[in-house]
Length: 332
Image (cartoon, rainbow, N blue to C red; front, side):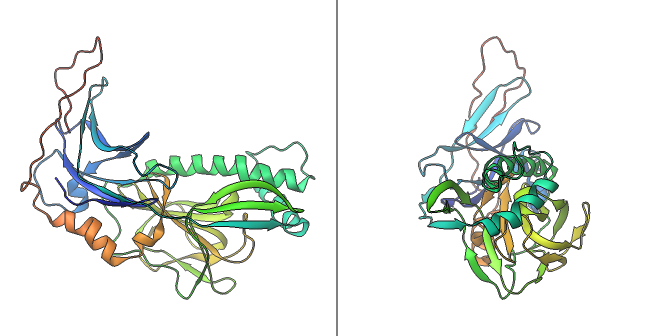
């Protein structure tokens, strides 16, 4: 039902659509990733249509710009319908950088991470480089799995208001989707992608909530050290890493600008700073968009104010698997 969807590579978008029957599972599929849809009333759309839905989705930094994007609906026995909508993708260039590793840095970060991350087992805790590589690879993967699980704890309505607020008076030390090559004794030893922004000001700087939300994680999270994750509803969340202290606990509702803790160098931080990123359905997306009120107005607010009955979309017939029997077929 919504129109004019512009997707930045590594960024987010939102679509409004109608599904029948209204209890069918539905959302947006981007390649192999699915993004759940939510009742439109949770986004503030005044409608009595039980089939009206809103879904936030993303084109991830490592997905091709020609990745198929569609809406889908699926019933309890697997019957599925698909529908198309207009969108335009804008490619983005991501930076590459080299991160030098030395023994002093490894001796500072590896032991406390291993001590606090008992889920990761290493053969020799005294081998700092091997421990670091295990942290940078395996523990990073485990942490991402935890973040994905936390995305299921999202509210069915939008909790945030207006644009998200960047930490004040900070210098950007690293950007989103920076391609990092790690170098030790002149040799390339690893390669990872930095999916967030590193923001630094002064040591122990107050870290405040970028927007209204509910705390779904407040504690140690591997490579991110002391970390807070806020749920902002409908699959949208924000992450604050490397904190030196925490001022909130799981279950707290926080307002925009409320103190979450102080910046630090816990986890894999090379110095005192805040690692910040936005999440859509547990996938890391470029925060720059969410910091921009103009982007919020055009990509989200505009669509929520459109008349959902002005441009009805044609339903798509269900593709029925062999041997399945369904009295009602899902359509999107």
